[in-house]
Amino acid sequence: MRFGVIILALSMAAWAQAPPTSAAPKSITGEVTAIDASGSLQVKSDNDGAFTVKTGEATRFYRIPLGVTDLKQATKIALADISVGDRVQAIGAVSEETKTVAARGVVMMSKADVAKKQSEDRAEWQQGVSGLVAAVSPDTKEITLTVRGAGPEVKTIVVEAANVSRFLRYSPESIKFSDAKPSVFAEVHAGDNLRAKGSRNDDGTRFKADEIIAGAFQTIAATVVSIDAAGGTLRLNDLQSKKQITVATMPDTLERKLPPPMAMMLARRLRAGAPGGPGQPGQGPGRSGGAAEGAPPDQPRGDSQGRGGPGGRGGRGNFDLQQALEQASVLALADLKPGDALIIQSARVPDGSRLMAFTLIAGVEPILEAAPRSAGQVNLGSWNLDLGGVPEQ
Image (cartoon, rainbow, N blue to C red; front, side):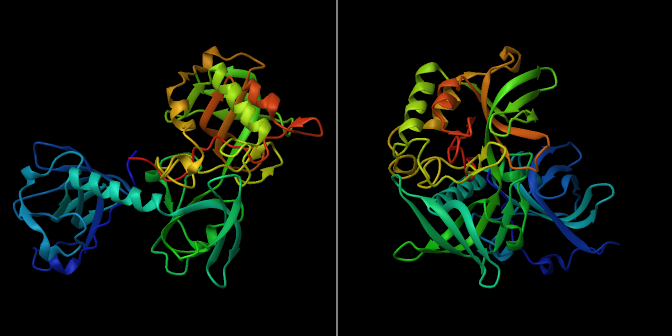
């Protein structure tokens, strides 16, 4: 998956000598998806959909190196030097109505440089911090996180958010970081999953954040009531609330069936609450409705707080749950039958709303048998599929 937005911080004054147009110069930034014979670029904008960038003899083209934001350090290039997959900032008269840009100038960062930048950004996120939001202090712009350690212990970290350059929030209908929307401090709430990159103090109790992404996720245990394989939807019985819910799948939904040995191993870990197992505390409180807040569903491998990290996934041994799930048999909805048990991860939505499944796992009967009961009902408690965080490229 692609990592986020790379904004080229360029001055509009650089184009001051360009021929005047009837509209004030603006810009769009995004990825080149096609180049046609007329010299127009098809660009998937970061924020506003697809645009056609129209170029001409007066259009100037520049390539800017990785990490550079000063146009004076850019290199002049030609239209032919731009390829599909490159990122561009097109500056000129932008028409929102026709989704076109009459480009005075186009600044390009190559696909290879973008990949390098993404790799560096992921490394920064991996060295950051993630956990469940325990408290939010609007007055001090501080967020208290509950964070899992290398073993069963749980600790808290105070995230200083006063000088955050960018807040993002996951879409309730997408696990992709690139689909996250701009957000603000006020949208962070207790119970959210939050990840920040920045720097921590010497004793690890405080973290000064540069960027923050948050989202609200849940893990639900359920049994199948009915299947609409053609429509990609399921009617399920939530085993905690005993209510029926509708769950829809997406093209990106991870649909897998656990092999019995893996399901039994996870059940043993859940039953024992072993360090590194699903029963490990600190992954978030359960909620009425049978869900437990889990980590955001697409984070980089090698993270000490989520799907992995230096020394393994969170220091929890060599078992890579996400990799094992990806290698498990693909689940076809048509193969399900009423009564089959499932574990689903989705965004947290108001009760009764239609859920969009990020992950849908069958073959989980041993896990649900090992789960604790509350008033005779299955309660996953703090367990989740551990699929969370900031995405891989």
